[in-house]
Image (cartoon, rainbow, N blue to C red; front, side, top):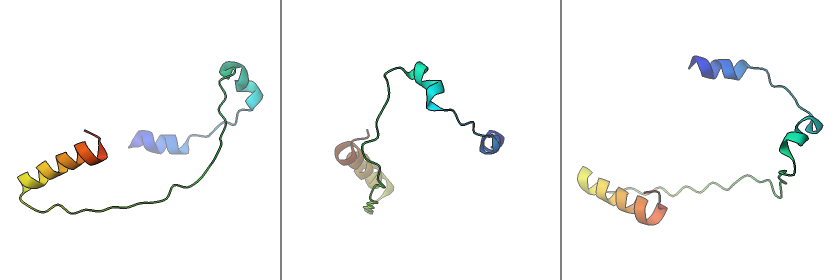
Length: 68
C-alpha cells in the first residue's frame, strides 16, 4: 500500500518526442481511432447446489467465455 501512495505522488517528467525518437527508431505506432467502449453487462444467475453451480460456471467459462 505504501508503494502505491508513493507512486501516486511521484512527479511525472515530460519528455519531448525528439529525445526518445532515436531509441524508438521506426517502431512508431499510430492511433487510428480513440473511443470509449460500450458497456455491456450480461448478468446471469446460476441456480442449484454449490457443486452444480460450480460445474455450470466452469462449463460457461470454458465454452462461452473461453477463459479456461
